[in-house]
Image (cartoon, rainbow, N blue to C red; front, side, top):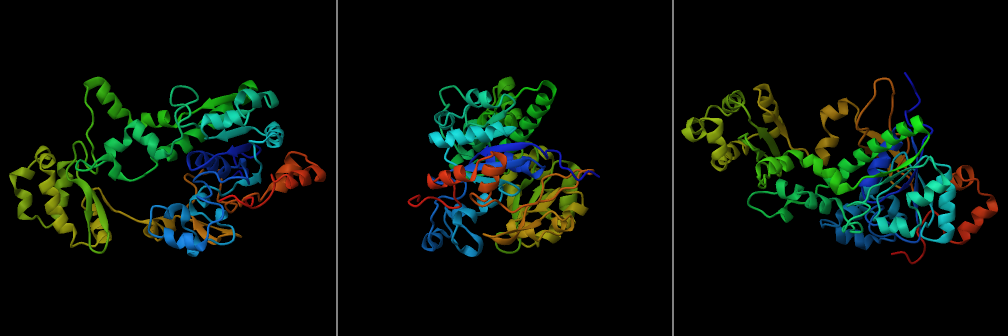
Length: 438
């Protein structure tokens, strides 16, 4: 079996933020690419290493149980000396990467950035287009330095058009694509669905795939190229059946929530305990028979209003009321196994703690431990796929800010000690954020 990972020898420059871009470079790094994050000390990249550079413990305490908890939650609920290295959101996608500090919005930073690009294969960014233009880091500029460069651009709405410079998060893109409308509940407006960021997750995989295609094309032709991947457009094909239903039939799909367009029952039902739930999906007469058998063949199940799939679908509210009264008396894992044994698609709804303790995931060795100077030893979600002839595992802890400055500047870019010191003095190089950065 090969011990060399498929992307070894490929260097990726990473100027990404939030999740879509970092998830893309995470996948590239996990399979061997040397991914170098380029991060400024002069400002925080929004919602990436957290919300603020110098967070106090009092701020952390106030954020508990609020909407800010995602970026204000730290190991053991302690901000620590370098909270920007301790954010769970950042740690989730920063493993196996390197970090250098450099402000590419300044003339000195742009000069150094070009030196790095000249020694690299791929550049990935998911900023608003005008930011990259102000940094003089467009493909037109960088390809002059490195004609073989592959540049993946992941703007929210594309590199041209009236929405070009709209800043966006995953939830905005999903709203524009119609996902929020379809997954909302019939009795609630779309704002009540909560954030899922499915568009960001999809974009990370799509971006890594696009880079693979461009690398293969470069191997054939010797030429680099720019990849434009508008995130909102990239998510619309996931809505393909609904888009085509409108195109072909003029139908606008109504909010579905947990409903299915033909299956009933099809919902999430409460079980014994606090906030414990099970998913049940019945799509065939055989599955309905299996469910009624596990329920003990209650009298209500023989009512004509539930006598066939169409009737059950038309009377979902009443059907769910009966099933809910029964599932409330059941332990979810026991019920999960009994339903599965009866041929009924079902499964417990697991929270994070349940997932970490899942007997299936642990028997497969899915979670892996990494030890970081800033977060200690933690268990991380593992690789999203495995290859039978290419063993792989998580190799390096989530990278700290500026952790690889000397390696990148001196070994990759060839700077002398004097040049390195000069950039330090100008504030580009360091392992913390500059004083005054909030």
